[in-house]
Length: 95
Figure (cartoon, one colour):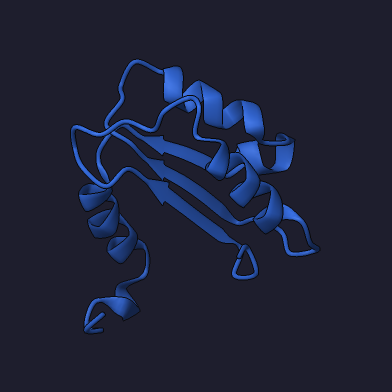
């Protein structure tokens, strides 16, 4: 999963928040992070601007991943637009 060195995670709706009990993510990240590939970017898009969700994600990460972590207090729709700006070569793809 982190073979490409990037990990993006977000909630599906602007009003939806990532619950603290989302154990699926803990397992997903653990499986993806196991390997030799270095994580280059870790972005989370979630409408919670209280700082609580950002803190929970940072607590999962080691120092190397934490340096590459960026939290965006916006929903995943915003995340798609943001990710497209990071990779302009994908702008013309019909996916």
